[in-house]
Image (cartoon, rainbow, N blue to C red; front, side, top):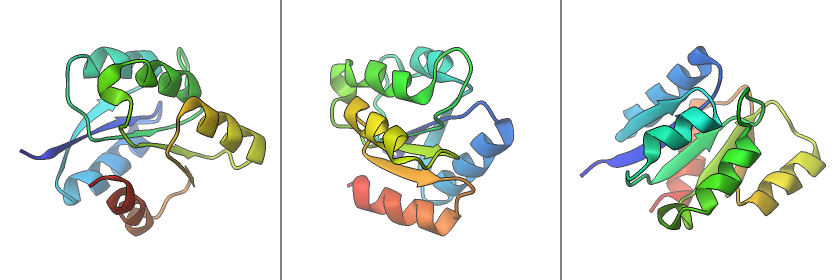
Length: 121
């Protein structure tokens, strides 16, 4: 069975780039355009990795992480923030919400896959 990743970003082109990168590494990808959209799409699914943007309409990335961490099957799922934000305060907020890692856009596909290989068994 292939690994499943959830990619959440309000930018369609960013979702496509991240999805393509993860698919090249053998992941099946579910895409969400914001936190609320993503939550609706992963209900009852087994997901091995979440990559989410921070600043999105409807539900931002930190709120999404908090909501995912409330779901038992997402308690230990690696969640990476991929965002333009790099302030320490935002990183700390993400970490306390349950983010596993933080990457700043624009991202390098090889770097993303390196991080993914460290957090996804």
